[in-house]
Image 1 (tube, rainbow, N blue to C red):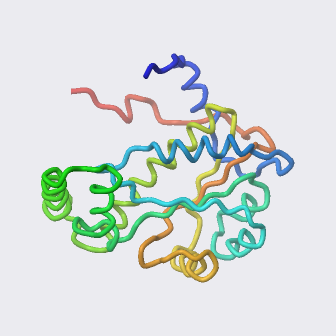
Image 2: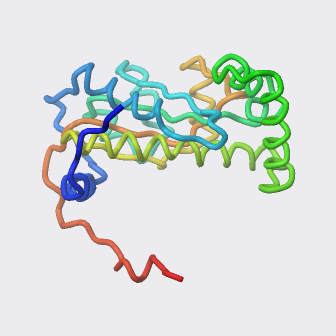
Length: 224
Protein backbone atom coordinates (compact mmCIF):
# COMPACT_ATOMS: atom_id res chain seq x y z
CA UNK A 1 0.00 0.00 0.00
CA UNK A 2 1.45 3.34 -1.03
CA UNK A 3 1.02 6.47 1.10
CA UNK A 4 0.33 9.75 -0.77
CA UNK A 5 2.89 12.41 0.00
CA UNK A 6 1.85 15.10 2.47
CA UNK A 7 4.34 17.89 2.89
CA UNK A 8 5.98 18.50 6.24
CA UNK A 9 4.80 22.10 5.93
CA UNK A 10 1.17 21.00 5.59
CA UNK A 11 1.45 18.83 8.69
CA UNK A 12 3.10 21.56 10.76
CA UNK A 13 0.47 24.03 9.55
CA UNK A 14 -2.21 21.69 10.88
CA UNK A 15 -0.50 21.63 14.28
CA UNK A 16 -0.32 25.43 14.24
CA UNK A 17 -3.98 25.61 13.22
CA UNK A 18 -5.21 23.33 15.99
CA UNK A 19 -6.14 25.06 19.23
CA UNK A 20 -8.39 24.32 22.17
CA UNK A 21 -11.57 25.86 20.76
CA UNK A 22 -13.61 27.34 23.60
CA UNK A 23 -16.73 28.09 21.55
CA UNK A 24 -17.86 26.58 18.28
CA UNK A 25 -20.05 27.91 15.49
CA UNK A 26 -23.22 26.00 16.28
CA UNK A 27 -24.59 26.60 12.77
CA UNK A 28 -21.85 24.46 11.21
CA UNK A 29 -21.91 20.70 11.56
CA UNK A 30 -19.49 17.94 10.63
CA UNK A 31 -20.72 15.53 8.01
CA UNK A 32 -21.16 11.87 8.86
CA UNK A 33 -18.11 11.18 6.68
CA UNK A 34 -16.04 13.71 8.69
CA UNK A 35 -16.84 12.29 12.13
CA UNK A 36 -16.50 8.70 10.95
CA UNK A 37 -13.07 9.57 9.52
CA UNK A 38 -12.01 11.08 12.87
CA UNK A 39 -13.27 8.02 14.77
CA UNK A 40 -11.49 5.72 12.34
CA UNK A 41 -8.18 7.39 13.22
CA UNK A 42 -8.92 6.51 16.85
CA UNK A 43 -9.67 2.95 15.79
CA UNK A 44 -6.34 2.74 13.93
CA UNK A 45 -4.31 4.27 16.75
CA UNK A 46 -1.52 2.28 18.39
CA UNK A 47 -1.81 0.90 21.91
CA UNK A 48 0.48 -1.06 24.21
CA UNK A 49 0.52 -4.70 23.08
CA UNK A 50 -2.20 -3.68 20.60
CA UNK A 51 -4.93 -4.35 23.17
CA UNK A 52 -7.04 -1.21 22.47
CA UNK A 53 -8.22 -0.55 26.06
CA UNK A 54 -10.75 2.11 25.03
CA UNK A 55 -14.30 2.93 24.08
CA UNK A 56 -15.76 6.16 22.66
CA UNK A 57 -19.26 7.52 23.22
CA UNK A 58 -20.48 10.14 20.74
CA UNK A 59 -23.01 12.26 22.65
CA UNK A 60 -25.42 13.95 20.24
CA UNK A 61 -28.59 13.75 22.35
CA UNK A 62 -29.28 17.25 23.72
CA UNK A 63 -30.79 15.96 26.97
CA UNK A 64 -27.72 13.83 27.69
CA UNK A 65 -25.48 16.81 26.93
CA UNK A 66 -27.44 18.86 29.46
CA UNK A 67 -26.94 16.16 32.09
CA UNK A 68 -23.17 16.37 31.59
CA UNK A 69 -22.97 20.09 32.35
CA UNK A 70 -23.22 19.93 36.17
CA UNK A 71 -20.40 17.34 36.40
CA UNK A 72 -18.12 18.89 33.76
CA UNK A 73 -17.22 22.47 34.60
CA UNK A 74 -14.94 22.71 31.56
CA UNK A 75 -17.57 21.63 29.06
CA UNK A 76 -20.85 23.66 29.14
CA UNK A 77 -20.09 26.06 26.28
CA UNK A 78 -18.68 23.21 24.20
CA UNK A 79 -21.71 21.04 24.96
CA UNK A 80 -23.96 23.82 23.68
CA UNK A 81 -22.06 24.62 20.50
CA UNK A 82 -19.94 21.66 19.35
CA UNK A 83 -21.04 19.67 16.35
CA UNK A 84 -19.94 16.41 17.98
CA UNK A 85 -19.00 15.62 21.58
CA UNK A 86 -17.10 12.47 22.51
CA UNK A 87 -16.38 10.76 25.83
CA UNK A 88 -13.10 8.84 25.92
CA UNK A 89 -13.42 5.80 28.17
CA UNK A 90 -10.58 3.57 29.32
CA UNK A 91 -10.80 0.02 30.59
CA UNK A 92 -10.45 -0.70 34.28
CA UNK A 93 -8.47 -3.48 35.93
CA UNK A 94 -10.87 -6.41 35.40
CA UNK A 95 -10.62 -5.85 31.64
CA UNK A 96 -6.87 -5.28 31.26
CA UNK A 97 -5.39 -7.79 33.71
CA UNK A 98 -3.05 -10.14 31.87
CA UNK A 99 -5.34 -13.17 32.24
CA UNK A 100 -8.71 -11.44 31.73
CA UNK A 101 -11.39 -12.67 29.34
CA UNK A 102 -10.98 -9.47 27.31
CA UNK A 103 -7.24 -9.96 26.80
CA UNK A 104 -7.82 -13.59 25.82
CA UNK A 105 -10.51 -12.41 23.36
CA UNK A 106 -8.12 -9.88 21.82
CA UNK A 107 -5.40 -12.46 21.31
CA UNK A 108 -7.55 -15.34 20.15
CA UNK A 109 -10.47 -13.70 18.29
CA UNK A 110 -9.24 -10.28 17.14
CA UNK A 111 -5.54 -10.94 16.51
CA UNK A 112 -6.20 -14.63 15.81
CA UNK A 113 -2.97 -15.78 17.39
CA UNK A 114 -2.26 -19.52 17.41
CA UNK A 115 -2.17 -21.14 20.83
CA UNK A 116 1.62 -21.10 21.15
CA UNK A 117 1.70 -17.35 20.41
CA UNK A 118 -1.12 -16.74 22.91
CA UNK A 119 0.94 -18.53 25.54
CA UNK A 120 4.08 -16.55 24.69
CA UNK A 121 2.25 -13.21 24.51
CA UNK A 122 0.51 -13.89 27.83
CA UNK A 123 3.87 -14.54 29.47
CA UNK A 124 5.35 -11.27 28.12
CA UNK A 125 2.24 -9.29 29.08
CA UNK A 126 2.20 -10.73 32.60
CA UNK A 127 5.89 -9.86 33.10
CA UNK A 128 5.24 -6.38 31.74
CA UNK A 129 2.42 -5.80 34.25
CA UNK A 130 3.97 -7.45 37.30
CA UNK A 131 7.68 -6.73 36.85
CA UNK A 132 8.48 -4.06 34.26
CA UNK A 133 5.76 -1.46 34.96
CA UNK A 134 4.62 -2.66 38.40
CA UNK A 135 0.95 -2.38 37.53
CA UNK A 136 -0.02 -3.87 40.87
CA UNK A 137 -3.19 -1.91 41.66
CA UNK A 138 -6.50 -1.12 40.00
CA UNK A 139 -5.58 2.56 39.82
CA UNK A 140 -2.25 1.88 38.12
CA UNK A 141 -3.93 -0.36 35.56
CA UNK A 142 -6.56 2.29 34.79
CA UNK A 143 -3.91 5.01 34.50
CA UNK A 144 -1.94 2.78 32.12
CA UNK A 145 -5.05 2.21 29.99
CA UNK A 146 -5.70 5.97 29.97
CA UNK A 147 -2.23 6.55 28.52
CA UNK A 148 -3.27 4.43 25.54
CA UNK A 149 -6.60 6.21 25.14
CA UNK A 150 -4.82 9.58 25.03
CA UNK A 151 -2.90 8.40 21.95
CA UNK A 152 -6.25 8.02 20.18
CA UNK A 153 -7.26 11.50 21.39
CA UNK A 154 -4.14 13.10 19.89
CA UNK A 155 -4.68 11.30 16.59
CA UNK A 156 -8.33 12.38 16.40
CA UNK A 157 -7.46 16.03 17.02
CA UNK A 158 -4.58 16.00 14.53
CA UNK A 159 -6.61 14.30 11.79
CA UNK A 160 -9.38 16.84 12.40
CA UNK A 161 -6.96 19.77 12.12
CA UNK A 162 -5.53 18.40 8.87
CA UNK A 163 -9.06 18.72 7.50
CA UNK A 164 -9.80 22.18 8.89
CA UNK A 165 -11.93 20.85 11.76
CA UNK A 166 -11.55 22.28 15.25
CA UNK A 167 -11.45 20.46 18.58
CA UNK A 168 -11.13 20.94 22.31
CA UNK A 169 -9.88 18.28 24.74
CA UNK A 170 -11.53 18.50 28.16
CA UNK A 171 -10.38 17.24 31.55
CA UNK A 172 -12.49 19.74 33.49
CA UNK A 173 -14.90 17.29 35.10
CA UNK A 174 -15.51 15.58 38.43
CA UNK A 175 -14.55 11.99 37.67
CA UNK A 176 -16.60 10.24 40.36
CA UNK A 177 -19.77 12.23 39.66
CA UNK A 178 -19.31 11.93 35.90
CA UNK A 179 -18.91 8.16 36.09
CA UNK A 180 -21.99 7.88 38.29
CA UNK A 181 -23.91 9.75 35.59
CA UNK A 182 -22.49 7.49 32.88
CA UNK A 183 -23.67 4.46 34.82
CA UNK A 184 -27.16 5.81 35.52
CA UNK A 185 -27.97 7.58 32.25
CA UNK A 186 -25.56 6.32 29.56
CA UNK A 187 -25.64 2.59 30.32
CA UNK A 188 -21.89 2.39 30.94
CA UNK A 189 -20.62 -0.49 33.09
CA UNK A 190 -18.36 1.56 35.36
CA UNK A 191 -16.86 -1.60 36.84
CA UNK A 192 -15.28 -2.08 33.42
CA UNK A 193 -14.80 1.47 32.11
CA UNK A 194 -13.74 4.83 33.54
CA UNK A 195 -13.83 8.31 32.01
CA UNK A 196 -10.43 9.60 30.88
CA UNK A 197 -11.43 12.72 28.95
CA UNK A 198 -14.05 14.50 26.89
CA UNK A 199 -13.40 16.06 23.48
CA UNK A 200 -15.49 18.38 21.34
CA UNK A 201 -15.35 18.77 17.54
CA UNK A 202 -16.78 21.42 15.27
CA UNK A 203 -15.80 24.73 13.68
CA UNK A 204 -14.43 27.71 15.60
CA UNK A 205 -16.70 30.68 16.13
CA UNK A 206 -13.75 33.09 16.25
CA UNK A 207 -10.02 33.03 15.64
CA UNK A 208 -7.72 32.37 18.63
CA UNK A 209 -6.88 35.54 20.58
CA UNK A 210 -3.13 35.05 20.13
CA UNK A 211 -0.59 32.96 18.26
CA UNK A 212 0.42 29.57 19.63
CA UNK A 213 3.21 29.76 22.21
CA UNK A 214 5.63 26.95 23.02
CA UNK A 215 9.01 26.54 24.71
CA UNK A 216 12.06 26.54 22.46
CA UNK A 217 13.10 23.20 21.04
CA UNK A 218 16.40 23.22 22.94
CA UNK A 219 14.42 23.45 26.18
CA UNK A 220 12.58 20.20 25.49
CA UNK A 221 15.04 18.13 23.44
CA UNK A 222 18.44 16.80 24.50
CA UNK A 223 20.76 15.13 22.00
CA UNK A 224 23.40 12.67 23.22
